[in-house]
Length: 431
Image (tube, rainbow, N blue to C red; front, side, top):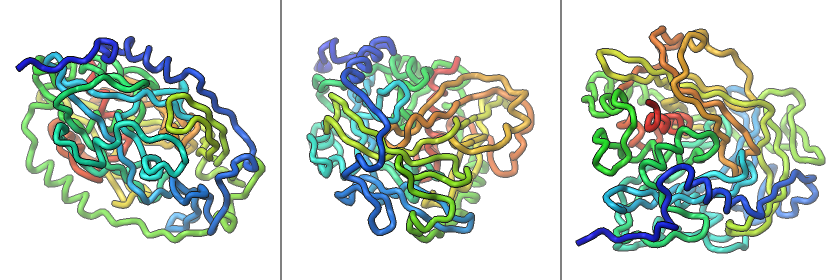
């Protein structure tokens, strides 16, 4: 039986073809900062900045061992799901061009579905979330290839998780407006581009299965040295050491504090801001209009950071195999207390020194990425993958992993930070 076909107009075989879809998503999109008084659906209630429906997310004050802070609180796990299908002998991914208020470039590609329960339950009063039934209902023509729970930004969210689902559609159909089927080549081309694939899509690409066979039609790294590391046997002692370290994690202990009772935060006509810069961001309000979203216009708060962040993954070769250095890093908002993180992470708005070993490293791949555009206003970080033979300064807090080993942990729930998942996607494209 021959494979079903999809109209060429609904498929993208390169990043250039994907760019055309993004251009359509940007049409009639606008965002502007507004005063807090114009955000009629948002108010301070029970000490937290909340939407009138009680859904979506809240900005809350907390107090923990590190002191007081403002965090985003969203106890309902969001769905980030991608539908795949074999088309012409290759696995294609159904991507959505998402115009978001905080995106660099106004629109980036996300998974097929990227939605909180408040969105797909339509608490905003808008339209239905396209294709969400593939992930929350039963369809015998769709098979689940992967289903994990993944943690989010631990210095911005309090105990937030996302359900990342990878599904396969037996009979691929023509995509709705602002959606397209992307080939493996288009995905590989795109992971090298800045602010093109959002961090949720990069995350699910990293979590998905990769193949060391470049001719099998699945996602496969371009570089032979990366493929060799992917197919190398995982070392039982290394896996055991990482699991032992992760077993020592302790869940965070924090109490809620009313926003208006925090010592360093105060309400302004534009939102909420710090007296002295400690967390490095404010919460401002923005009015948005978009043609290809469930709701045409809305106003919402966004985290607005004062400076860019920095994410680095150090790589080296040992015995002919590529290895990546990951750390077990604590973050105050992680439900697990700590997680595997890249070699170096500095959040947008934070201050800190660049590690000494990084000055001698050779940049292998880089891009500038913005945090989730629905919660953060153009909060960007420089993502760098570097090659180094130097000793990484904090090797005692982490491990050098082969790609086969890193992929084992990426496939697990609540083990890897979103920054590690995001930067790992670059390994598909480095040459």
